[in-house]
Amino acid sequence: VMADTGTSTVALVADGVPKSFSYDDVFGPEATQQQVFHTCALPLVSAVLAHTNACLFAFGQTGAGKTHTMIGPEGGRRRGPED
Image (cartoon, rainbow, N blue to C red; front, side, top):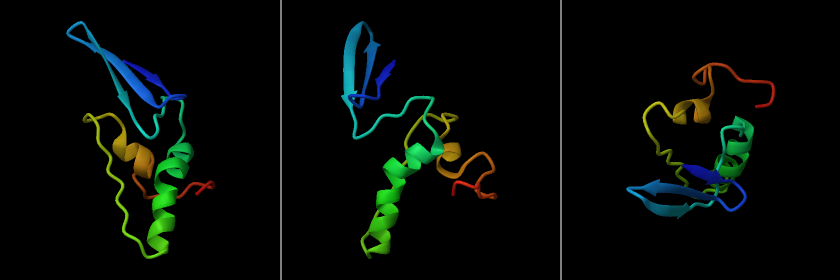
């Protein structure tokens, strides 16, 4: 699996057949929580505060880090200085 953050695509080879998937945004393992939040969630928070509906749907393999990415290593129990 190859993720290209510049073109927001993910490429893989399945059964010898190359496949490519395009997304609005792609984050590599070096991405910080702040980068993911500012790109994905902050616009939705702004929309909700402007009385619009919003939904952030996290999809991925079990153990891939969805919860950690969304609420942090403390499980949302602690706020960091950058929050």
